[in-house]
Length: 293
Image 1 (tube, rainbow, N blue to C red):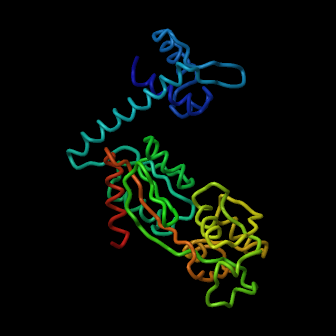
Image 2: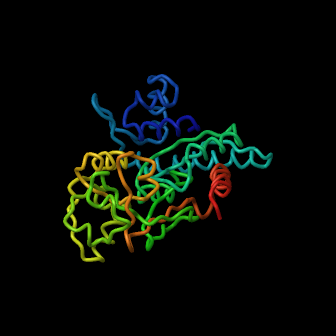
């Protein structure tokens, strides 16, 4: 068993396809298949069930892949820690962000990170806060930038608050509320809303606030994209509760109206509480530099 075989097994498990896994590993499919077959003979277990249309991980394969991931992460950490003793930051920073992050200029922060650490690589993933926290806990991500309602604190990870905003109601410029100085949640009852999918942390901010206020609302449009939500607002199809920074950076024909006692969204940077990798520590130093204390 060697390191390349571990990488090949993990790549096939992730891609569920030998061809795509070989492309990811920059080897031919025949070479990758040969190495995995050799490993299966050594283990005396089939790791994958192959068919003409799909590749499925066996029970033994699932157990092996989990340990292979741990081994690969340990090897990567060992290489990074050795480099760090000489003051070098190497390896790949795996960063997760919500699509509505406003507390940090993400491209600007990554430019600064890459300028300070040119040997490091960055992989960026966009998702909802709950999924990103789970990926930090599992080691799939090094750092995540989250947005959660005020009463919720991420569990199982270390966090640093990087910003907080009270949500505003986004309405089209021609809407009756557009000229109001502010509104109450009760003023929004009965209106058609666009919001993030039910069950996500982005949606929970509004759901909890309206529920506690005893105000019913009609969420007719669900979308993962703030850009799409703002497009629906611009078209006068719906209104939406969003962070003011999201509205300010979006459609020009949308007005942000403050909401009295509206929900507060807190943005966090989250990372592994026990053993953050050197690339994570380096990126967190950038966060500290660009976010006011």
